[in-house]
Length: 274
Image (cartoon, rainbow, N blue to C red; front, side, top):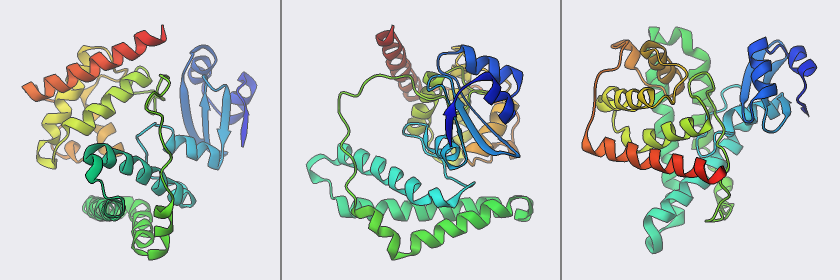
């Protein structure tokens, strides 16, 4: 269900006073919650409140290029898969140019999703013997079964939508408003994560660099290291918190160049909107 955003409706759905104030006064503030009404998602920019599956769709798919797996409603899996596939094909085509082979890329994406499922299952099975994460494990296995069925490949027959190369500059959605100051900061984090984060052995060092730089540039609302580590362990399936509760000092020429490039791009986009 989609309804107009009003103070009375926000109170009715159980938003706290702080969230209500931000939603009614900030230009672009998205906020989600889970209560006895189910999933609720509200956004000051859209001036709308989403509930039910519409809220879940916003919660999992509104992060621009950054999708989250819809654990709360597996009916959204085909949509999640199709959006992910479309993004993947676009990236591969830009990378490969005239030697791009769509059929091979479609199958590669499916196999990568299968590998990701196996990694998630193994990761949570090893935590407290998996007792606290049975729901995640079961739902990931359901997705794995779906990926292994040939029937789902009908999705791959759909051509990805053509994206205008001159897209209108708009403020990105801030998927984690309690962590990042705005959508631009969240977008910066995701771009850095995609380029800098390498393998599991280097994750602690790489995330240390990203968060230390973003704290210094005041892009984060949450600046406590232990809370940020808890955040990435939960949302990005890392295991850093098993060994560390504080980031270390980490830097390199490659990382610094990446940060400077994306930070400059961020400031340029913000300036274009002024």
